[in-house]
Image 1 (cartoon, rainbow, N blue to C red):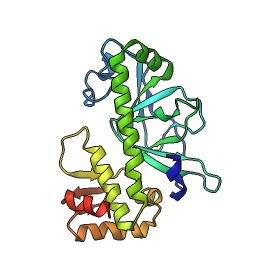
Image 2: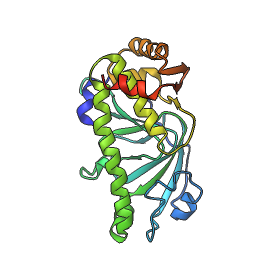
Image 3: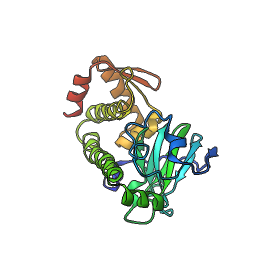
Amino acid sequence: MREIAAVHSEISIAERKPSSVAQPESILAVCEQCQLKASCPIASASSTRPAISEAVYDLGSRVFSEDGAFDKVYVIKSGSLQLSINSPTLKQKIIGFGFPGEIVGWESWSSGAYLYSATTLDKSRLCAIKTKTLLISMRRDTRFLQQLLRMTAQQVMREKTAPLAMLRGPVEGKTAAFILDIFTRSHKHWSIAPNVVLSMPRNAISSFLGISPESLSRCLSGLARKKAITVFNRRISVLDLDLLRSLATR
C-alpha cells in the first residue's frame, strides 16, 4: 500500500468512536445469521471458535489509527472504510478502500503497530478478533489457517495488481479501472444487479487516483457517452463490462 501513496492527495476525516460495541461472543452467536458466513474464514472455522466482538460505527468513525498498537484484525460485515497513511507533506494520503467480506489490519502482523488508519465512509458493521485469540485458533485448526491464508493471499494479490491500472496511462483508463475494481469487489459476495454504489465522495476518489475532481467528472461523463456506464449521483450502473475492461487496460 505504501508504494502507491505518493500519488494521492489530502483527505481528512475527523476521528470518532463507534456508536455501539458488543462484548466478545461465541462465533456462533455473531456469525450464524451473517450473509458472509460461507466465504468468511472466521465464520467457517471448524473446531475453533474464536471469541469475536461486533461493533457498529457511524460515518467518519476511526476504527484504528496508523502506528497504534496492533491488537485486533477486522472483518468488514457491512459498510465501507477509507484507508490512509500519514505523510510528511500532507496530513493524510488515501491508499485504498475496504468493502464487505474483506479483512483490514492484517498487514500489520510483522510490525506490531497498524501500518495505516481506517475510517468509515458510511455506517458500518465490523467484526473484530483479537490477534492473540486469532493466533491460538490458527495453531489449533489447520483448515481454519488455510482458509484465512487463502483469503488474505487473494486480497493481497488484488491490492498489488489492481492499483497498477489506476495509476498508469490516461485518466479515462484510471477511472475505468477504479470502477471495474469496485464492481468486482462488491459483486464477490452478492448476487445483485450490475450496480456500484460509491460510498466515498468524488474528491476522495480523485485523490486516490491522483487526478482532479473535474477530470474525474469529465471521465465519468465520457464513459456514460460511450455506453459503458450510467451515472446517477453515487450510483453507477455497468452497461458494458467488456468495454470497461478494454478501457481499463489501455
